[in-house]
Image (tube, rainbow, N blue to C red; front, side, top):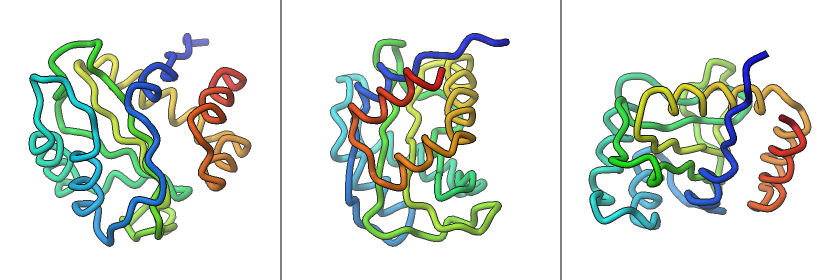
Length: 154
């Protein structure tokens, strides 16, 4: 059994954003990239452009109302700058998910290396398989609830 990667500190650093309005992924990415507290080495425009460029290749919607927006290659310069932003959308949007469900929550991954990126993806996919975790997402759980659930589920 592979060790579960601890994503709690990354979510704490990235933050939880509720009732974010937008009708396209690009609108959401623009709003979020401006709301993020970023390291000095990065601009909100770089984050926005990286997320949009990846979305143009293929939808980051994974099903169950969840999307995993990320850059094509790691954009954070240092490991300590990595973060996951949890974004609850005010209105679910069609992002052409494999199960055709509209996306209501995004986990925006901002990582500094491919290994961390893959570990985070693997951990999140494991969490998304759990009904109890998806229920929390449907209820727009706050940071404390999410982090508690992550600790309980690993």
